[in-house]
Image (cartoon, rainbow, N blue to C red; front, side, top):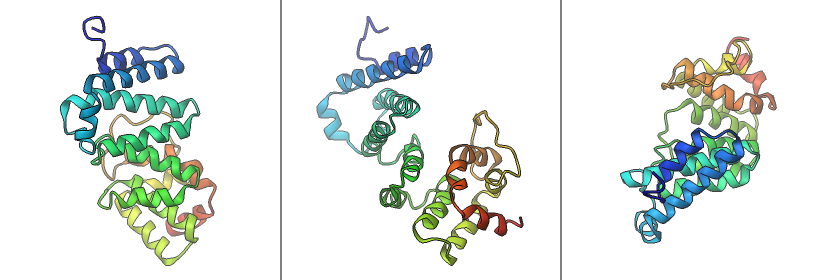
Length: 215
């Protein structure tokens, strides 16, 4: 396929998915990014910035870019991964790929709280447990435990009541990532806990969470 059309991002994505090492995956995804940039052209990027995913021909490029960002993060290059995530959100403001979740988690881990607040403000109607519980975490990290923090936690628990049991260790967190996520379901809770339990364990917020849930 690449011999017939060398600027095919999805061809590199397929090769990356079959690669034997993380470094090889990263290299192939990067080649896919470069192929997509060549395929779409600089003028296309200028004209359609902000609405990429809605244009079908951008999706192979965006898939390659996501793969590149994820493998960068897995290789410990979190700052470079974050730059990719930021660029993807600029290219596609609707964020159909859920890039904001990976970026937000990274910002909390590095205590980049101001940027984290700005990121969440871009998606005020996001209904996920990821955003709801991270609002709690961020408010506590900045202001300590307040009535506002408690109210945010109550809202989060209404969004997904299963998260506290995993964060508090009442239920073991599965090692396997859930195949499908639904709003407010157990799989969503597992996914959140897998990505955030270490963050929560660093905060006395766990004591408040335990008290509020009858521990």
